[in-house]
Length: 116
Image: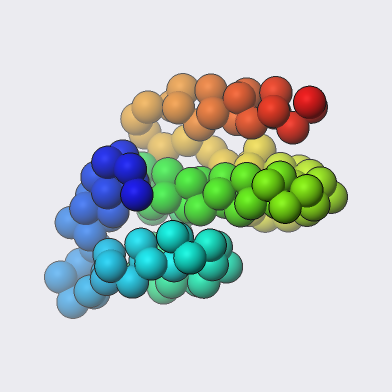
């Protein structure tokens, strides 16, 4: 897991109320194993994508990884579905209060890969 994801998980942990315990190890294991649905469900137990910047970006990264997994598997209809359809489509991710350009720039890179 890269340092950006680790920093985001730490930020998410500190933004949650004290009676919640976000198990970073379990969440990281879900991500590494490729269980993006499980990671989304686990993350949804603690926050939603509109709560704060860390939450927004973590949900975005989970869905981006799902999109990349579809591309790697060669399942292009699934990849297109991840970008364009449904409430969690990548193009629907708004940006929270800071670093608004990260998601927009990342989506531009993903779109350019998908067109190839």
